Image (spheres, rainbow, N blue to C red):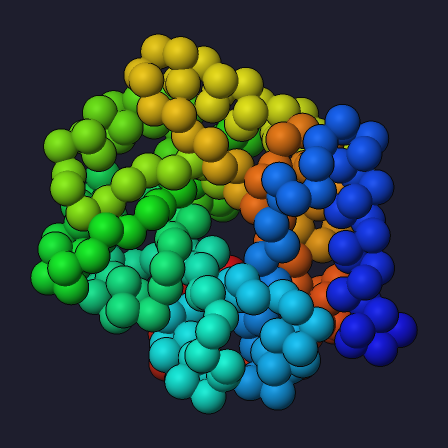
Length: 238
């Protein structure tokens, strides 16, 4: 398939998954994750009507975004180091990966300097994997409480990355757990948490069936990634 065909295939799969779940396709937004791809591929995505792009490394995004179409909305979907927060809040309209109280405070401080309010998602490690970023579920309510005292961040929802398994169905319990946690926290804290960022190229249909509102799709749109090259921000996470 060429680029446009891959985009149409992803859209079709999103629509089919939504129908299975009794949801409107408009309730699910595709975040086209362009990490390691250049401005030309981003322009192709924009030409196909994809206007939300995701990056996982701040330095790569800083080099790429000025060369891309200006109407795009950029989301930070990878692990964010506190020393990159100042630049991140200038580049991104949403951060999916807040995983600590200190990071939340840093984002709030940087946004206060910029005179903006940043919608953020709290990354939750529902699997308990030590190799994964994210807060344990038990620590999330305290972070929500802390966020209520911060004027320059707005917690819009939750994000998770399940353990990788070749079979997409294996991710379902983790997506379901995040949704169930969200429902419980909504009742106990008063936070609406409308957004659930979960699901990637190999499992986004399962994520949609379990309530995802943002699906982070890279390979299924852009194709196989080019060989990885060392970058200035090596170590920032996937």
